[in-house]
Image (cartoon, rainbow, N blue to C red; front, top):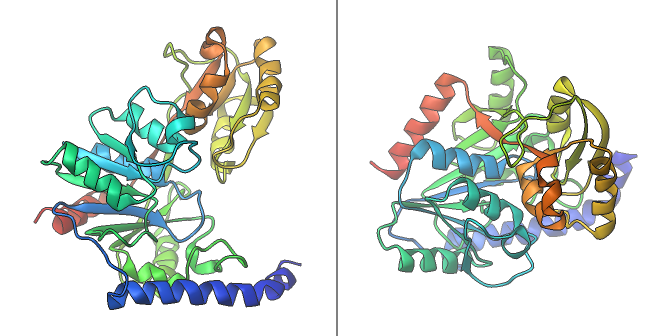
Length: 338
């Protein structure tokens, strides 16, 4: 059935590929302008639509590179506001978007800006802090109006870009050949204990489209904690996700808890009163709710303060094998600071 569906969408896919190929050619030929900023710019993005772990990767870069001062520029997907604005540490996801709000809370030392036009966001950040050491553009692999000194491409172990198709036949934002712009590729959400043959298989397939080095990361999960820093006192919980591809999160949770119900919503979902009422059925029965931090920043304004302690966050981070960790950091430094 899927092959028939893709065949029917083939003409639309060819049209979409043609438009994207023409756009990329226009950038390469200089017909569309790329602005060079006087500081290192790291671009984090993907070819697939969502779910590759871009926000945890931005946080990994902030943690590992230890840049100060540094700016993070995001489009602020899903926000109700418009324009270019800084994200305060106590900002709400409805105004700034869930991912920028999460980053601003976790890294108060960083400037986080939302802007439909990243050039304007980075310009404003530099006006505010002229001595910025670097800037990170979140979800910007296809946003080429700002020149990226280091372009980091993410793809998942479960759905690598080389086995996918451009929209609408598949989930690629552009052709696989777009990977050639990457300075490094990270295969995210890998299973534990990869052997050499598994790594080699992915490296060979990816390097048909890019000569960039390939690294591998896993998702690590912190124990669930509420606003008081406490863990759940019982093993029966409800799970809530509004993220792309929540399967690894749910699998991890089920290894440690009995999940009574998984309340699953689309990525960046705006919770309605009906959604809140449904999850509160569990809270009223004393059943804790476990969710991601990205979902938490969207959900919290909808709950009365007396229920905040019943919601538990599992924070997610990328971890690399030691050799990959050291090699990726060395590659970043060689492109950005030498």
